[in-house]
Every structure is written in C-alpha cells, then in structure tokens.
Length: 163
Image (cartoon, rainbow, N blue to C red; front, side, top):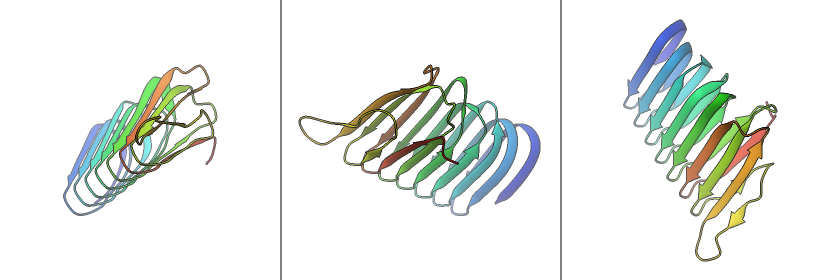
C-alpha cells in the first residue's frame, strides 16, 4: 500500500501481509502490520504509533511530539527530531532498534537490553553485575524530551547528528 497525502488530521493504516509506504503530513498517524514492512516519511506534529509483528519499520520524520514503536521480530529504524518535551519510545523482542537524532536534540536517553548490545556516542553502557542485561542513561542538551528504548535480544544503536 503506497499513500501520499498533503495534509490530513489523522491517518490510520492496518495491514496483514503487504508493505505500507506512507508520505504524509498529519497531526496523528497509526500503523499496524503483521508481516509487511512499514515506511513512513513526513512531518507529523502530534502522535505517531507504529506496531509490527515481523515486518521492519523505517521512519524519517520531522520533530514529533510522541512517537511509539513496537515490534516482535522486525527491526525498527527511526530518524527524527523531538518537539519540545516530546518522547520517542521503542520496544522490540528480537529485532534491532536504530535511532538517529539531530545534533540539536534535547532529551534524556534511557536504554535497556536483556541480551542485545548497545551502541551510543553519548552515555556509558553498563552491564548488570549478576546475570545478563545492559543499560545506558544519557542526556542530550537540556534533556527536555525522552528517548526510551528497550529490547530483549536485539541490538540498540543510537546516532546523533548523522544524516
């Protein structure tokens, strides 16, 4: 499914096995997919929610107020800024998570994995003393927003200022 929309108040896409490719300007957008890949690009000022079971999701967005991504086994990739006080939350069971933030991002960063790795240019990765698990906490700028990433066995990679 390929969608291009100039300006809509709210957009919602539900998909079972095909891909979703959307370029939109919208206040709110939601995409649910079972096995198809998701690609969303555009300027989304409000809430963005992406749920996938086994497909990958790739997002290229302007500043967002609230971005929530969830995956069972698909990889999650997002390049986005945060609106003042905005949040970006992503969780995955076995898929990887990649987040690219702009150089001027202002956010607290919290990352946790059970058996996956963590790569970030900011903060220090800490390994649990007893048992598996890694975590990272860091701050960019004034720390106005929140970036919270959780993965059970997938790797988490953060980049800042990269295009």
